[in-house]
Amino acid sequence: GTGESLADAAAYAARVGAAAVTKAGAQESYPTAAEAEALGAGAL
Image 1: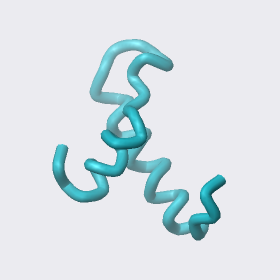
Image 2: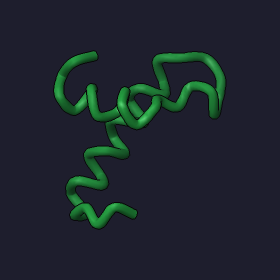
Image 3: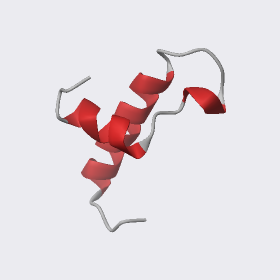
């Protein structure tokens, strides 16, 4: 891990999950780290 708090880790997981359900497929639908961070910034 990166040493983030539980709340930060849960928020990151929620962003990844939200992005993953917008594309078809399983593993290929996972966002990159940059895409997940952009979701947190409201950029996507």
